[in-house]
Length: 549
Image 1 (cartoon, rainbow, N blue to C red):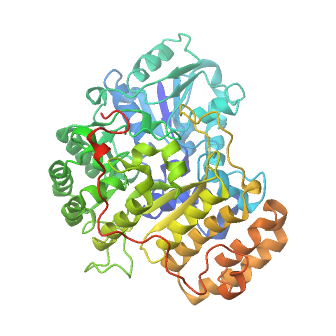
Image 2 (spheres, rainbow, N blue to C red; image 1 turned 90 degrees about the horizontal axis):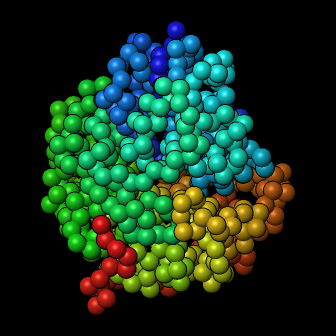
Image 3 (tube, rainbow, N blue to C red; image 1 turned 135 degrees about the vertical axis):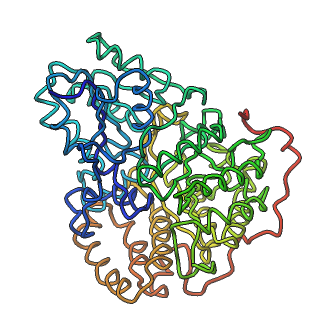
């Protein structure tokens, strides 16, 4: 007969692929019809309970489920994957809620990487969401339920004019704790819903405690950021921390349903229980991580996002956190000098090496340092992290509005200075996201990238190949495959600017490339910027660049 309320998420966004968040994200950039090339199917890992409900789904969907369980009976609600929709959607169903993390594949990373397989390719996340929202079980019963879509990427549906074709009754843009329960109750009663609700960051007191397990064992510890980066909506929301007892209750829920790894999720780890003016509260951070690790059944603890400036300002914090973040990490690398070769992977947005662009679009990210100090902050922070076995996953934004060749050269100079670092640089293209100060700017287009921008892009991935996959077999495959790709598809898709940067990715001899590229890896001159002994905090640091939480 069907459940009264059905919540669902796509298979790819629910997957715990290789137990690695960054591998899951990178896999999602692959076009769906090319999955066979990586010899994997991320759907096979999606586990179900005995009754067919999902064992784990994205944390946002679990939050909505917890809100609803405060008002509705458990037998009225089902949380599932697309393959089980027919089991739970029926004549009695009155509302279906879908989670949308990246439903059309137009975020920073996905938008560029799918294009390497040809124009018009559909990233896997987009194909999987389409499979979810166009599911026959939904179509068969569409006349008697309301369809609500929410999640971090829900805005993509409105921007791409998909609300009508996909029969979306209500789009929730933002964090929905304040509005979700009311919307679902109205939908159950058959009342009309607003076409769009713009939700704002809630007070932590209204965030419910989880009832069931999230993908990757996600446990939130903060919401918001407040540093004011213009390309990010989260950075415009003041940061707030969840109480420790709330955090630990959620950890116990994850463990009780089979998770042995806890993903400590935050927009910025160093803002947990922060002091005035973004000051890191090292004692509270250490207490929280140790408490999470002490929960019976927890074997691994993984951290998510952070910023570089707090690392430089309070380097002792990294040392205090390492006994949990490194010793209990799931990540291992042969170059780590940790006894078990473990390392902590922290997601850090570096974005640009140009102080001019940095000051224009993201100056709060460097506080208490000046934007002009950003390259030194990055180099010093990387040194501190690497010494404590932290190998960060760092994003860069190529094609920021107004980026000049000199700006790109400064990013290349910083990239060159980091050539011996232990890290994972991930270049992306600028995408104007909804509800940001840069939402009306034009997106960067891959075919319009300059030779310098392509050099930056492929030098990043050459670093990654050498660090994570440095074997003769891999080098041989790229040495043969890269020129074939350029001749068959690359030149036609992206133009001639891609040629020599792409050959660097293919491990072609640098002495052949040095005349055509900005960075000279043949003669290896000293970097134009070096790691400073100390990065001084300027006098202006008595007040933050943007309002603190």
